[in-house]
Image 1 (spheres, rainbow, N blue to C red):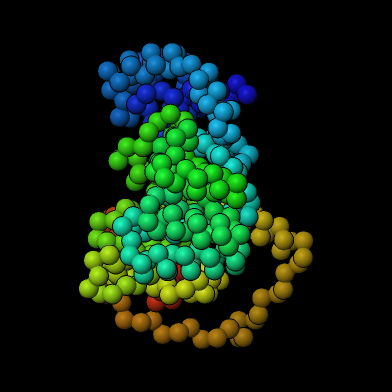
Image 2: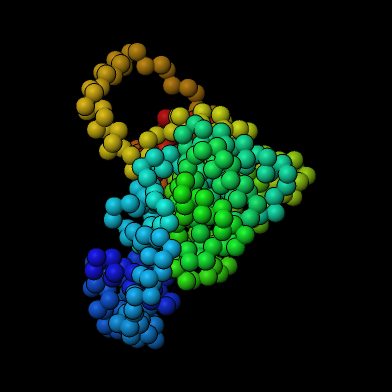
Length: 382
């Protein structure tokens, strides 16, 4: 319990935030040790200057977790630090996962089959219809729906999942003592009973504009794939898609009319290589051919070892490789670099490509069926 209390204390330090919290835990090894850190010790951490080090050293010793624990009990919220039971395995596997999550309801093992559905707050009737159909049919196929409880597409996706009797997870930017947007408070109650609410933000912190992009990385990190239903050129749903690409998740987009500003962002995603999706069957079919995620590989191997595996066919039985399609220069560079299995981060450094740009190229090469993604964000030629 003391360890959990120390995690809560770190989360409550003003101005610390998830990134610096993770840096403290990496440097000092435990929340208790981080709470004892002196200003000179804090200065050894990148991006902490002398003024901030002094302020943090004082704040770390002054935190009282009593009011926070009272609110946790009042609202039925459970804090779960990274590495503790109940922390979502898919999210734990991404780069820089949140050090602490707050849950109302619980993440369960079945939620490893989660798919994010996101889109515009100012959605059209077409967008609402597609979000509803996708969420309904995917939960009936056994998937959990993840979204952000926002107005528009998010709320439609949560409601459709609930009405179809499935599980749904709502990721919030602010604390769970007050639901945002307030008109979704009743929806949030239903989600918590048929899935869970989750945030990385302490109970009383109100959502600020800059917190929503950070929230979006949790939405993408919890799912095997993200579906952008309807998004304009500046939609926050595109930030979720960018996070998904960086996390090695599949990106799907629903096409819309080419002259519809409401679908401009979705169409741009498709142009850059996102998988075009018309219905839930498209998503299910495409996911069948994708490698087992790293966070489930040990389970899959255990099942194989218990049941035995069939011998591989002799080399003479293998079909001849398909001819390589014509590739544009950047695609060819990435393909050439995959002479052996490589991690995406290693490729980005070697080829001097931004992670987001490389992710799009790799996704397009997957669509051309010339490379495949492996567990752990590794890639190899087919």
